Image 1 (cartoon, one colour):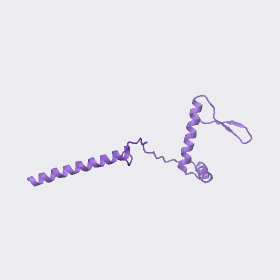
Image 2 (cartoon, one colour):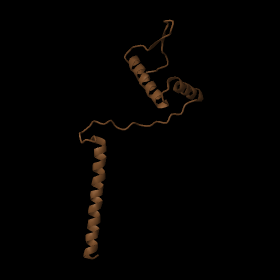
Image 3 (cartoon, rainbow, N blue to C red):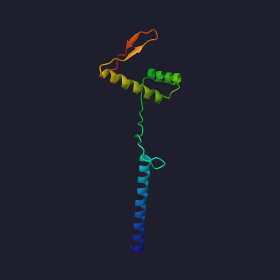
Image 4 (cartoon, helix red, strand yellow):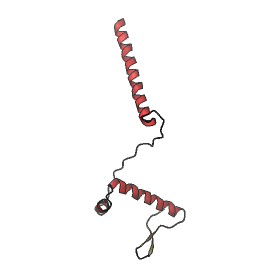
Length: 113
């Protein structure tokens, strides 16, 4: 390999290193810095879940979408938040109770702990 080829090889290595550093810096900036350069505390990206459900439950989900105007994802997030609160309440010895329009109280069962 002659001197010019060695020079070109070193130059290519240098450009590759600069490019990699640029990519790393850009990723760091996107994760930890705002567009104005201030550090921000960003949450990790949300996780995606695929859920398979029986047809009757899928119909319930569709009914809720139509009744509330919320997306399936939003309904799922709210259901998860409610379920977590119910489980936490049960674990602490509390009860999860629903009140009918006539004032009748019903203990929610089947939550398991």
